[in-house]
Amino acid sequence: MTPTQIITAARRKYNSVGDTFYADAEILDLLYQCELELALAAFTIEATATASSTAGTQSYAYPTRCVALKRVTYNGQKLKKISFSEDDALTFLNENDTTQGTPLYYYEFNSYVYLRPIPDSIKTIKYFYYKEPTILTVSDTLETPTKFHMVLVDGIVAEMMLIGCVTNNNTLCNAKLPMEWVENTRFFRNSWLS
Image 1 (cartoon, rainbow, N blue to C red):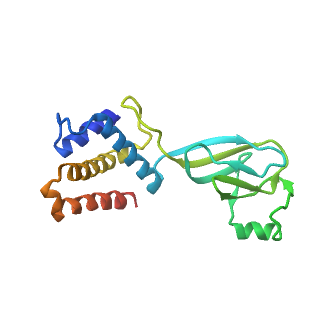
Image 2: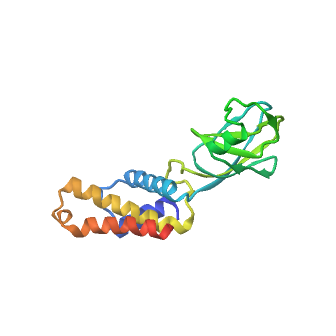
Image 3: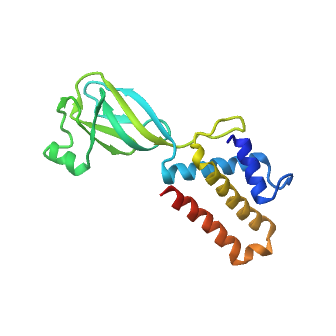
């Protein structure tokens, strides 16, 4: 679905086709928010990126908009992810260890990947990762896979309902049913992703 089709689907589901209360730009913002929430909770958008190592340099920044790493390779060879404790064991508790060679391991901290041993030459580091979506315009192609598009529609409708309740002081919103529906929608999204 395109962003325009998702906006239309959300309007239809919320029964607000032709309604001027929600501008398309506002629904587009809700679409981005739902896409971001989904990407952070369920790692729905996959990507790859490469960087070049530098001899003697241990740390390399995550790719832009990276949420989580799935795999890191060095010169085509998979690196094993290790913990700080495992790094301590490799370096005999010397965090300033500068031993160079072909990296076999990596650990993560503060959006950086740290290689062990430290690279001794220029090679390709490849990241397999999950990322945040880009901010949308109506003419963009969604990065979220198609199988999640109706989940995005449900999220938009839930958010539209909350906005409508707060803005209009809707008496129906004071009842339990609408809030249960919102929670059920969120539960459905989470259980569907499991």
